[in-house]
Image 1 (cartoon, rainbow, N blue to C red):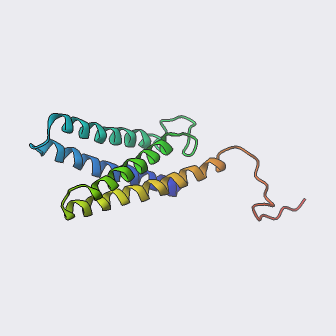
Image 2: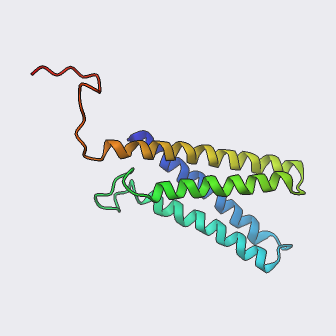
Image 3: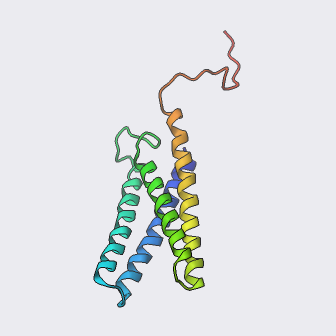
Length: 145
């Protein structure tokens, strides 16, 4: 469980750094058209709101809804993976400088790997918290009766 919580906090921190930086860049870019600026700010805010909501799970704000039992972490992870896959491929094939492509490839791969690890760890908790009886013999524990 502690590994999942560490991954969750790492994902929240990574998301905050990436998207707060993006907001700073969008606001300071005078060449952006108003529509493009609005769209980019909306995407950044979606990521930040989802990360903030996801941070409420280990803080206990979901009352009796522990990790693995909500769809919030899964939704965040899947949104991150899909967004960065589509956007990352688009950036690679678009007309950007190599430095831009390199930085954004690292950001996209980092986001995808982190979200994938968190998704797997969170989904792994579902069976642990289901309340189903565990057969100790299947788990390799000897039971003397």
